[in-house]
Image (tube, rainbow over all chains, first blue to last red; front, side, top):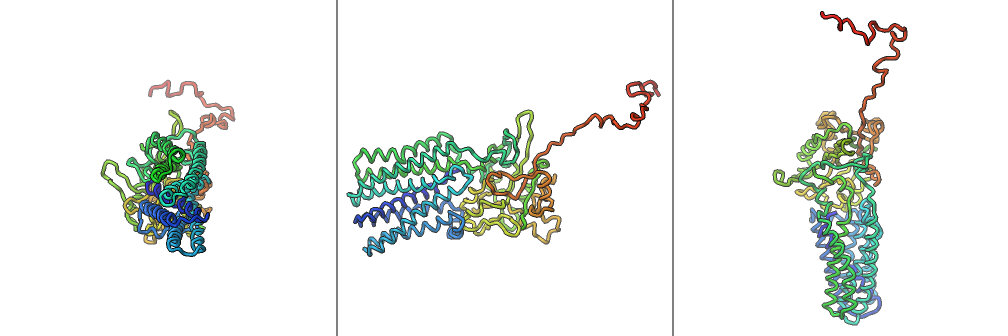
Length: 306
Length: 243
């Protein structure tokens, strides 16, 4: 598959926004009074979600009709995501505003619970968009959902640590420890999906694609010589070295590099923000590789131009 | 229930691309608007097509066969592209089983193309919506056309009649009879999409000649013991006489 920048940004920004909100709400649940952190943190979370939503519009051919995409929530995970995302943004906004206005504990708590449930639902919706496509075998696994959620939580916790170091220093160490734990878990599940995908055998072959039972089939012509939508959308078109570099980049940046920084450097605000930026860059590489790695069965029909 | 479909005979297709050009012509002038092309006279022309003919070589030299393989939307009975559509622009008609895209509702998110294992859907780069074969839905019900012409443009154009069009749920239709009697098969059956379009396999057309076809065992002369004179090996009148 060809990685689209709009989708890479959408999924990574949403993940960080959701993770950040869940981190803030966890501290709130634990009874920690850090109003400034909760206010600015919810603004940051809302900003990340809004940026992700904005990025998603660049994926559409007809963005002016985007409102229509809420229609088919009964069958389409994409439609469900379109409904859950604004609802979650509203909950984040309401939770932050309730803290700012000093509303009663019950109201803040109920808004927070709604936000946490919607954050979890959004992780499922976003990941199921990919995991539900059964013939994209690299994606069709529960690991896709687990990875989206775990990686999102890890980056959100790293950002929470950075914000806490700035706004509510006593919490920074706890958030940093949680970010380490979440990062380690996400790293393990991502490694598990890499190992799984390395052993995949494509179910479709040229023999099933054109229905001729012969082990030796070679394409001679694909019906067009100037390329088509099928050759543009489903092939990343990068040399193998780039794909391998993306994999090593995300394998280094998603967890090992931030973990070393967190373990061996003082937890200053700047260092923690640097951690988040590095990890976020790693997540972009991770998402790029996630798309590049997926081999669509339609590619069988587009092996040779002429 | 009706399920309209194409049945394509790979044994007959000669790879002339007449179905491709006919399809493009009909659908680019049709009521649904142009099937746009980009840089048609440039160095790297590209464009939107509903139908393509691909060519494959099967086997190893010198024992190879060239297979021409027309490829378009298969109008699956369980189309994976329909449920994923967030707007409902992609739908399967209950009355005749044609899978269609409502170009006025499509937001161009391309998710349906990811969900199609056959690569049957293409984004029109000008209209920015998803397009695919409509089985010439604007043609097959047109009562202004003579009944014999109420067929998809590709079927009308095929010079070798490699394309059959009909209701594959009607056991007496030409299409379902061909599937039944000539071993029609579906593409990528492993995904359970139940494509409505079927392909008829290549067949060997070898001639077996048995010795009794050259010299009849039941030749009455042989039965009676009256062999031809002179015998087949002896010189005949033509060999000994110059006229």
